[in-house]
Image (spheres, rainbow, N blue to C red):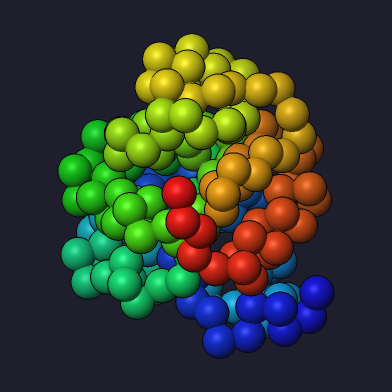
Length: 185
């Protein structure tokens, strides 16, 4: 899939405590496919710290502060998981608004593990077939989504997966959907 995403810009929205491998492996896949991926964060620091399984992980440079980023400048959105990261994002109205703009525009979005928590806050998961880390299934069902326990689920440009073990399948479908571009619902 080299250069499948040439000329595409992808926003990667994260806060402190994102699961490291859920950022690094998808970002590498995006870059290998030719995309330009930017780490965007509402965090005021120039770097944000990852969570690596059971302890703090590496620090990563923030490419753009959320207040400076515009959804219309990006073709797609990646939402890594971890527990702390999406919990902070879903409580941040600016972050929810940023994600909502991708959903409203029909731009492809990929969310893994706990990443769908932020999607729930947009009010745009009703009627969507999705997966996530198993503990989010009640939240997704209560938001009107059809939750399934599958490695990767694609619903009109929305790509979701359960956990780091699903990353190979997640990356493959993410690249496909990001290459297709906008999806009308």
